[in-house]
Length: 203
Image (cartoon, rainbow, N blue to C red; front, side):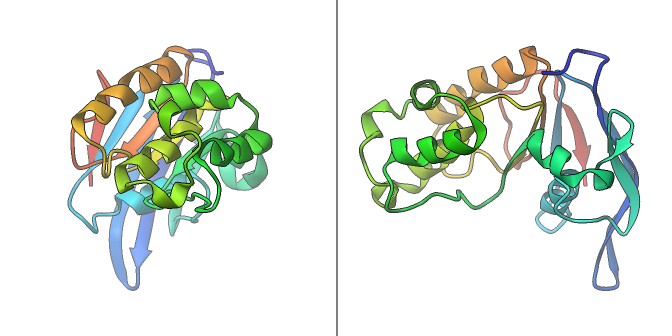
């Protein structure tokens, strides 16, 4: 994991177009290790689009995203390996149990299923197929993937959708542990998140 001052996510003069309309333009940011950045604003303001650009899934109309000074577009596979991107979709396999869903991703990324279950209090649901979970439980299962093998960058799109207050609180220690190890969190959100001292960009 990155150490403070060692690795940084940055963007300079980003622009995104939707048809002929500029969603945003001239957007720059720099996020050091251990920091958190909140993306706020109305629906359609470009929060999800910006996350996808930071993930390397979309190319900006102008500008560039860099990691440790290097353009992420130059090595997309390396950038993909250093991040976890949680979109609006929970990306679960309905026929697999909660534990099996996590085991699938642990096989891809590494990490242990037990601690991931514990991180979002999913132990009692471990043997249930994902298809029977409530929307909030599915979101907790998607978030539990963050507790698998560590990576420096978490990009979270409305991570608390469907969660009750207790589940939002439970997310706090997971986010704090990631940041204390030098990890970066960038989250698009409409509600407050347990991310003390987070900076905010309103789009």
